[in-house]
Image 1 (cartoon, rainbow, N blue to C red):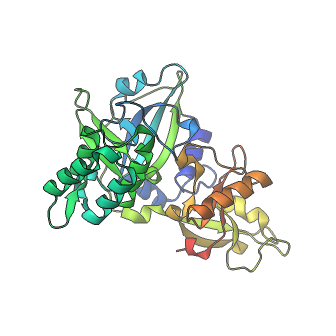
Image 2: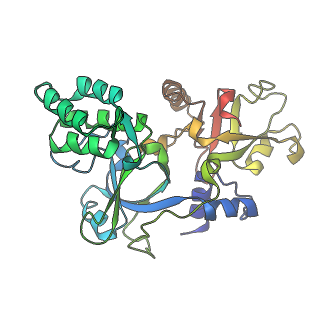
Image 3: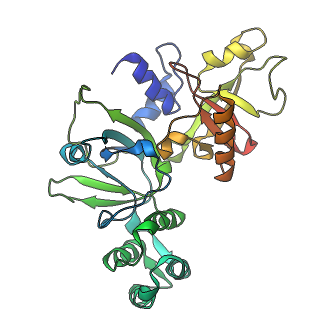
Length: 327
């Protein structure tokens, strides 16, 4: 990996790179962040927003299938498909959540095949306890009974995410001692990298455990920078407008080009719409059509800002349109 690619990945994690250096505090955050790196074979360029499965291809749940076993992912990356290395942050496992029965009733009424509703309801009620059912048990019943149409698998994924579930962990799924993870919540993706045939791979079979962390949720809070001059759009509007993860980039927009004029705030990345987490590309900050479309999508999804590309070898920027993004 060359220095430009490394700097791009660091900036993608919200780590400011000044020249070829990063702050010691940011280095500690990178090292201590609780993440798991996995392989995926497929085509994520079509987007992650709507995942539908065919036939029995969702036997472990509706989501993005990831594995620590290189050869398994490579098998699914042939033809027009690609091999990806994906980093996800630690979240909530399926088996650790109990779903209120009122929520399961609503899902059954809305998406379970009508002829199977009575049987599914009976089985779920028999396995419930104290007005709730374990999410792992609920999902197994839905899968084993073919209770929903394949076209509704993404509805099931969204339902699980709304219950606070991020993924399901399946150990030794293919008999290689590997860990497979079915990701439901795409906002848990930290980074996504396409592995090209000529890329050097140092570790094929990846570690199966999340790295320990002391940073917790705060790892999603990053520092951003803004330069304003007398001609700046949104000047004096409390931070509404473009912010950069790179202070050296922001300083060029100040009145006199001095670092002391650069404003600093902190934002929560969970509140920022990032198209790459849906499998797409970042919209261009310099393309009016892409800008307007990204803003519309972000507002519809309940975000408070949008991540934009400033062009090749330039740090990404954030357009904050709601002050709730600031911390």
